[in-house]
Length: 465
Image 1 (cartoon, rainbow, N blue to C red):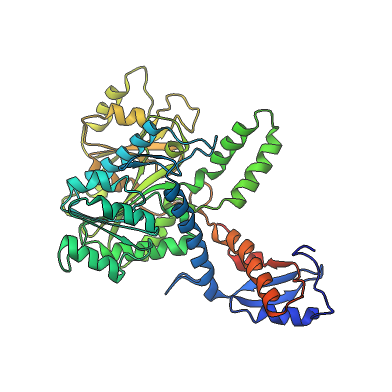
Image 2: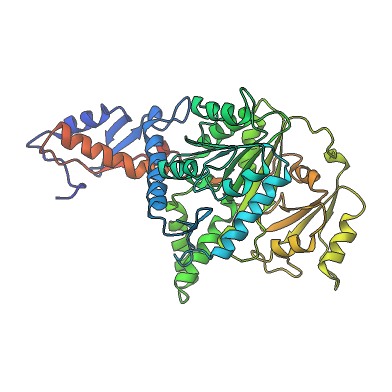
């Protein structure tokens, strides 16, 4: 008999089953619905993030830790000690992403980090050390954390100079073990001038957890330092991403079928994505002054890592020495007008601090004179400039020159995001996991009882925004 069968009333009646489930500490309320389903409301403590993750949040985080522990142990993508690409696969094909593309991906992140001129770096979620191996020779000290034992053990065994590695979660930037490692590498009580989290936010359960991470990361970094959050999935491009995936899987499908599949894929997506506007809202409540710049991924190859992801650099503390946002010119893109791209960019950016905005991204927009992020980066070689996402539309790009005025592109009132503010995977996880836990609870507590069909109240699960 399936888990969805009605309660066997010869063992325990429906009222008693409801009471039994309602008494579970992860449940705030349980009530029968007219169709025989038992509707449950999770207890707020079960889905809480602060002051400590609740049990359902811990299970969500543990799920990802177990996934990566297994991936790193198999080592199927391990090319070398400093190039372990295990787990990096294309959503379109399921095949491993090309090693050359992944080297480009790593190099672009290294360039972004080093452009902030850090000396003491704390990386939260360092994984197999793709960045640690390349950054540590350029730093006075590096401390990395990861939730997987295998990654921490391998990096510790590598014996990289001026480094330490600790098993800790992303929200534990201020945990005693992390502080002890920083004391060892940076000096007693010395703070990092850069906190880095790269390609990890997709494993976060929701924006509340992201808020907790940012709170601890911003508190950990010294004044004048940066918090870099890299390789973020953009929620405003989520439908575009799944539309491309579904069309690649079925070239003959009708548009209506594709639309239905995309809606289903978005609803069931198990990874967090969010727009920069979500972070701006979070930063507005932080006690420290923080300025934000939003950077495009500029790899050469057209993949989901280039199209749908972006980087944030959060500049903490005073803006002394940087151009005032009111002194930065803002020019709309006027196209190439028959000229070469480097010529157009030099003419637009030469007069002084400038944001050149509304540049159509050729990977996402079929517009005349659209440009890829890579082509912009190549054309700006040797120029003090940064390739950004446009602040008004994630399908557009912008250029800041000099690069230090990049925060001016995000200056001003918070705009409504294009598309959704965020997609949060925790509600779907709760809808799946809580009924499993409660059915097991009934079987253990009342042996022989067939649990009812249990459904989590959608409103109480906290829907995606």
